[in-house]
Amino acid sequence: MRGARTLPPARAEGSVKILAVCGMGLGSGLLLRMQAEKALRQLGVEADLEVADIGSARAFAQTADLIITSQELAEQLGSVKPRVVTISNFVDLKEMVEKLRAALARS
Amino acid sequence: MTPKVPPTSAPPDQRRLSLSSLLPVSAIRLEVRAADWREAVRACGEALVAAGITTPAYTVQMIATVEQLGPYLVIAPGIALAHARPSAAVLRPGLSWVTLAQPVRFGHKDNDPVTLVVGLAAPDDYSHIQALATLAGLLEDAPPRAALLALQTPADVLAAIVAFEQTHTTDTPQGAG
Image (cartoon, rainbow over all chains, first blue to last red; front, side, top):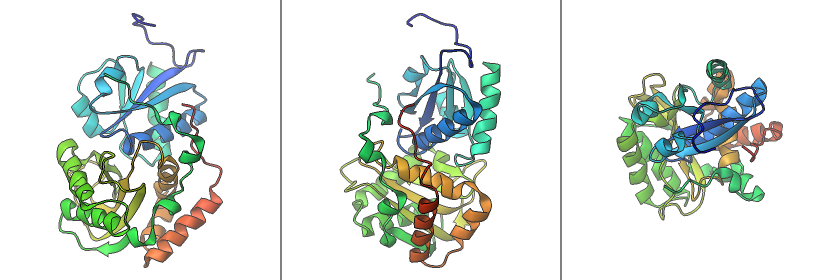
């Protein structure tokens, strides 16, 4: 694992590692994680989902393939290795499905 | 850096606290007058205090969270999820529900202005997961959301939430993630 720099293909046997980033790790991030789980089930994609607060997100980002967060927190996060998907409406499953579909297609 | 323990480590029974069990009728306030986002979050905190969920210190912590991290807690058009970290100010897990007589702006690019502020007080990062899932379901579609926000009494709001829970029992968040 350590030292592997290439991202795994999104739909191969290895699952995608997705990090939901929020301010505290227990409110909106938890919501993002649950919505992403539902969206990924619709998309038929296997993924590992984790939640991190903004303070520890950069460390976690090292091993993630994709980050989901809000626009505000994406700006605070700055430049990170994984692709960052920003979600505007956290309760809109359609937005989550469409943005994850697009991001996974480009991975 | 110690990795945060993911919510999946929660014992199964602690993932099942429903929204209706965490939202006392005394923590529901409708048509509250607030001049700005601070007053709106304060009203939300006062509702938590009134219901015995938090101490007043938590209200200060919620306002500080917005000051430090910005308006990211405006999670959907018109809806803010106010919260702070687990702390001694949280007496038990719970939520409050405050609708505003006049919408206020938090400074969010897409989702301002806000008419509903949901206050969340959690002693940990998993016991409220079912309640959040229900909240997302309740607020996802515009017509039922508008109907919910038009209800006139706290008892009616709680009854609508209970009715929603009874018809959406299968959508339990999966722990394995």
